[in-house]
Amino acid sequence: MRIGEVATRAGVSTRLVRYYEQQELLTSERGANGYRDYDESDVERVQRIASLVQSGVTTKLVKELMGLEDAAAEARPSCPRDVAEKLAAELVGIEARIACLTRSRDTIRDYLARTEHAAVLSEAEHEREVTLAHAPAAG
Image (cartoon, rainbow, N blue to C red):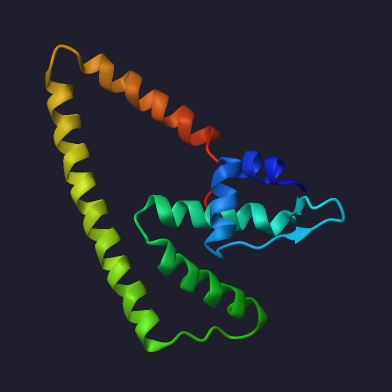
């Protein structure tokens, strides 16, 4: 499939797909016409990369993780100690950000629920559910 279809199905821009390729997070075959050619697994890979990057993981660390994932697909995963330590530290950071965001969300939700505009909260939560229902699945 061509880059536009991968981007659309993954929920990202073609520019972002090209950037991931430039950063060596993604590879493609080139057809005789010079166009990039991707397969089904690339859609899921782009979604995983985008999800990691959006959560704050650096592209450098994503590249290491994708390399480990590729190796794991062929055999039992092997992960150098320094990479495991980086991933563990990143996980701790993500958990801390989630905890902070959860506290912020709860504070805002509690405040809105006590105001005369509590219905705004219900509307926002409904909109969020609709958005999540139509979002591409993160792998």
